[in-house]
Length: 337
Picture (cartoon, rainbow, N blue to C red):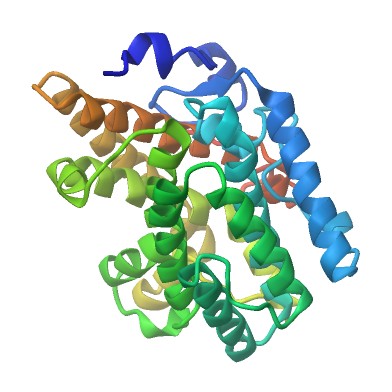
């Protein structure tokens, strides 16, 4: 039986409230940073080099992905409990999907969906489907490398990614008439199920569907917080791309403008308030669960998920991916509240 303190906490260091607040970040969840930052950086560089070798499109030169010199690579703060032998596979998968996400901003929606379905088929074949394009050849290398470390847990995670690929871009923002219906889709669209299913792989542990169901109010609140934080901090990037005819705008800010008739800045502030409300609900559920009697694997999962959500919020405030753009309120790194 794994000892929590001797194992899950041994690869990372907590980030102090003072450091978090200095960034302007509003998260109230605990945040930890993996001590093996260089391993994440090296793995990200390897994956970008692999992409360039296969696709030869120079796309990586203009790409802002998981990197962040202030907080650290997103994987390092989202998965601070990752075993050292899992860092490379974890980072390769996320770097690939961040690159894919940005690449498809420049691709017609129908073409993107067809590409995604092929990538899902490669996953379901466990990387054995013969690749037909440079992108598919790159992805086969990613899948096979990821599975070589832990095939069983790796496939559980990749099946969640396959579902994401089939559903992440199959509707437009105009399809929604309420924030509730949008959130139901956004949880899938933002990649929250795969984010959860990557944890057992990262931690070398098992979590069943029943385990997840037993703490679902906590997971739901955390996921909604991730969605609204993303929409708050990525909005200016998405809007500017959409205004230049690039990208597929999927953001709650524009939804509120349409369904409630409010101004853009008011809608943007409301999205931030929703992000903070859902995070507060997640924190309350976390504390309630940790005071209760939980199976050891579920307790570890709850702690790890709270670090994932808190780390994602902090990274979102400081990362170049979003902060290369001025926000509606001046500077996206200075989040009041």
